[in-house]
Length: 298
Image (tube, rainbow, N blue to C red):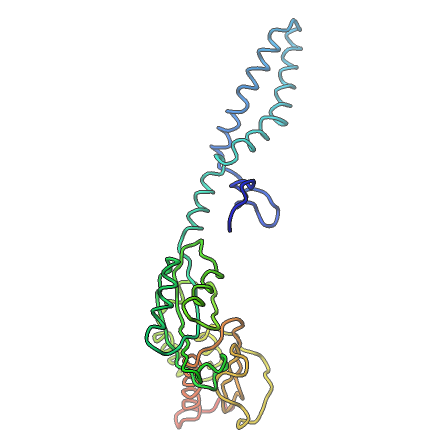
């Protein structure tokens, strides 16, 4: 965001709720008040001392005048004139935060042909964006993302580290300029770099201990929410995998009925759907195997 020249530098520090600046450090506030008050105090004392008033009147006049000038002139002037210096530590901290690399997840459809990924990486490199990880998801014509598989497209998923000033719109434009289609970009955290295979194995061990944990395990695996009380349909009518909406995932099970998961704004990939279905198969094998009782009988 470009700053208006008339906008003070400290405007970034204003509270979104009360509109006030944060409290400056006590040491800086004290020095600022002394720097502003000292000249005023000297001038007031010099003016009052030269008068021929009684001693008690001079003391009273000095006290009242100095108090009024400090409250109404000195402190507001210090806060205004020395505002940038008072909040310099907070401004430096905010600048470091703004300049720190930000993590993003991005998905885009590209043609499955030589040079496609190179064009994407070159477009991102122009924004000084580093690709931390990439996953390529093959698609078939049944995938809801624009029937992408029919024209030989694949879904590329990235974890990106971009300079703090790079915006979502700039990343989307870079993906488009690199030949991507149907791109999505959203902020993420370092958890996006976690080892997915290790996480899946840990959740499989959790299901092995208690197959009834399947809905919670899949939700944790996909960082999604379980949709409560989904419409119950006979198993043959339930289409496994990603539903009509790319951010809705249905998994048929023998005892739960279809489990429905939602992740608004972040479409499920075919690979994620496959992992979730394998966990469901594991839960059913364990629940109905010869050494386990069914959840209904527990």
